[in-house]
Each structure stands twice: as structure tokens, then as C-alpha cells.
Image (tube, rainbow, N blue to C red; front, side):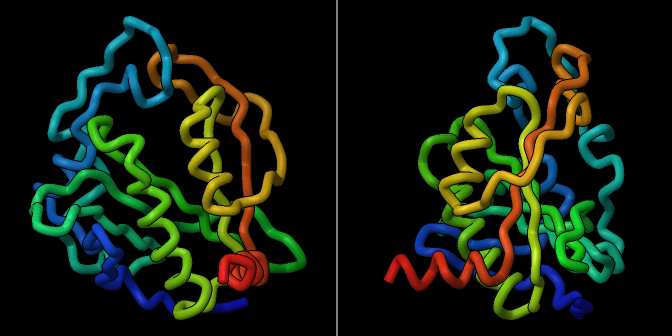
Length: 195
């Protein structure tokens, strides 16, 4: 199914504003300690510098006209980005439908408040029912159980394990990657069931 990229549209939830980011927002959203990214006890620490964080991102207006959707998460009344949600080309094809892939990031001090599920529910509604996407994939690497909980809470269904396809950047090893999927039909059935 072909779709027209409607772009990273300004969206709101009860507690959040979801919108395009600036370089300052990118730096704010990705300002974290990698030891917590994978829920590991490793003492290995990766240094993140503004240049390495911004690698591949720029303020070129065509960035948001490509096949990338990139929302930065702001709490209402606060102008500092606490995370982001990116949707770009996925690798799963089911019944002739190609997926888009969703990934997310949230600053550690905001974990456990339901911010990612809240943002994803709004973004997925937009992607499935306004943009017209038929299939979205999502996944997590290794033992990132917190990410698994978020994915399952949203309603994604397990699809398959890709052995040694994920990467644990703290311990510098390949790990299994767990892939999940959500179709437009699954999303809309889930919405009906919640009414």
C-alpha cells in the first residue's frame, strides 16, 4: 500500500506536546547515560558529545520531507524535550504490506510515568488513521525488559526473534533482537475493545 508522507504533524496528548525538534531539542532528548539505556550493570560508559548526538540529524527542511517522522516529546508547560519518537522505513513485509518501524527514547528521569505509551498511542492513531499506514513494527534488543513492557502495553504483537541482530553498545556485543508488529486492523480492534 502506498501512502503519502504527511510529515511530522504537531500533536498533543493530555500531558504532552509532540512536534518537530531543533538541534537544542535533539541534545536535550539524547542527554543520558548509556548504562541505563539497556538496563545493564556494566561499568562501561560511552561518552556522548554534541557532535556524536547530532550525527545524521540537521536542520535541513528536507529532513522532515523525507520518509522520516520524528516527534520530540515535551511536557506541557515545559520547553525542554524529554525524549522522541521516530518512525522510518521498516524491514518487515506481511501480505505484501511493508512496515514502517517505530523507535523511541526517553530521558531516564522521566521513566515510569507512562510518557512513551501516551505519546505512542497518539502517534499510532495519526499514522494508521490519518496517514493510512497498514503495518508498523517495533522491537527491542537483548534483555531490555522495560522496552518490552512498553511495546506490549501499546498492543504490539510478537513477530519473531532475529538472532544476534541487535547491538548492546555498552558491552560491545551482538544480542538477539525481538520484533513486534501492529497492523491498522489490530490497532482499530484494540480501540474498539477499549470503549
